[in-house]
Image (tube, rainbow, N blue to C red):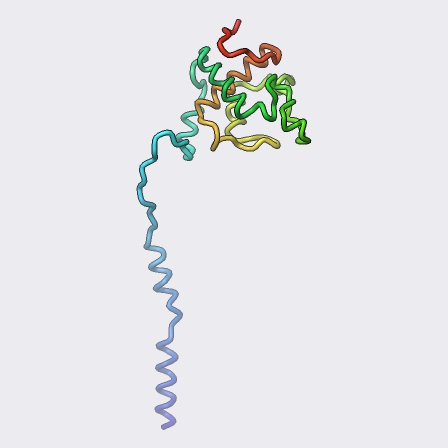
Length: 164
């Protein structure tokens, strides 16, 4: 009897297993694939390859239409903080938010249009990224408008006026 109890006990102990070997094997061979869902037209691409291609230098050719689009987008997205003249005197500043740098400071004037488009994309300092709000082509338009605003000394061009 004693021998039978020992044999049953040993067989139970040897048959017990944690099961981790099988679980690890299954987990390592299983791949998870996302289903393919076509992207609707007009959606901002989130992948870095598409974003890098859209923001590759030298960017789009500067035209009066591009500058006008940049002014429109600047007024919508940038002027609440930077102000219409780019001096950092937007409406949020009057409500207690710290002023952003003026576009007319030498260090900001030294930025290229590509660098400005990158700041719009990635953010900098207190400014958060606008990559999910502003299309890549509009970032270029805003950047070129800012360069023009800097050249004109902060006097915003009226829509429809030709630049000198």
